[in-house]
Amino acid sequence: MWAWIAAGGVVVVAAALLTIRLRLLVAHVRGPSMLPAYKDGDRLLAVRLRRPARFAVGQVVVLRNPRLAGVRGSSRTPLLVKRIAAVAGEAVPVGISGDVVPREHVVVLGDNREQSLDSRHLGVIPVDHIVARVVGRLDR
View 1 (cartoon, rainbow, N blue to C red):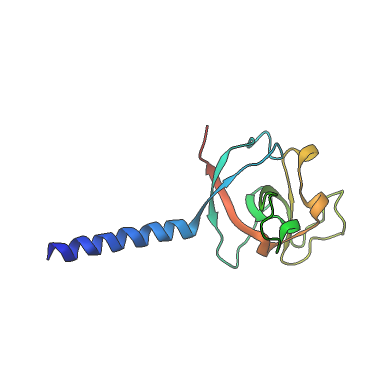
View 2: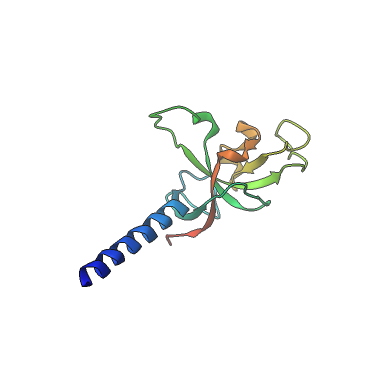
C-alpha cells in the first residue's frame, strides 16, 4: 500500500513540475536595450501567455524576434525583452510607419531607445509573436 502512495506522490510532483515548466519561462536580457530597468545578463521570470491575451501599455513582454521567424540554427537572439508602447487601435508612436496600430498587433520599444532593436526597426509586432509576460527579475 505504501508503494502505491509513494508512486502517486511521484506522479503528483511530476505533474506539478510539468505544469510549472509549461507556464513559466526564464528569459535572459541580452544587451543594453532595457536599461535602466533591466541590465545585460539579468534573468527575468515570465508567465507564458494563454490565448487570447490582452496587453497594456507599459507591460514588459518576451517575444520571438520577427527577423528570425522560421530561421533554424540562428546564432542571433531568438527572444527579445521589450516594453509595450502601444496596443491595437492606438496611435502609432513617432518613428514607426502607420497611423494606428492594427488589430492583433502591438508596438514594442526598448527602454534604452538608442540601443534597442524594436518596433522602430521591426514595425508593429503580431501578438502571436509574444510568448510571455514578465513578472519579475530573478537576480540582483
